[in-house]
Length: 154
Image (cartoon, rainbow, N blue to C red):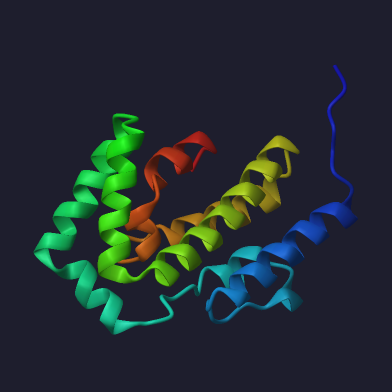
């Protein structure tokens, strides 16, 4: 069975599009010049800073986050959508949308690198996912990080 390996130009295009999307969503520190996808992405910070941190540390918000993560684990899409709406009300729809877009871009690139058996890019994107999924980040609150990281060997 023949395997498809994306040409270097295609991988570079995915990397460029990913970094551009992350830069457009308010992430700081992206640097395409060093060749490392994780370098710029790993510095992702919530655009609204401490205000988001304060909301995420609120006990009521932590309960909603825990319920959302439980819904992900049990594959309860209806409950997950409801808890996500509650978080959107607390954090703002733009914050949720921006964090979701950054996460989806990096996750897609990580899965593509995994499928192409590109160990270097896979490791780079896995590191970026770990950074985006740190426990104090919006992404960790709204996405099934543990499930997705396990699926690509993270």
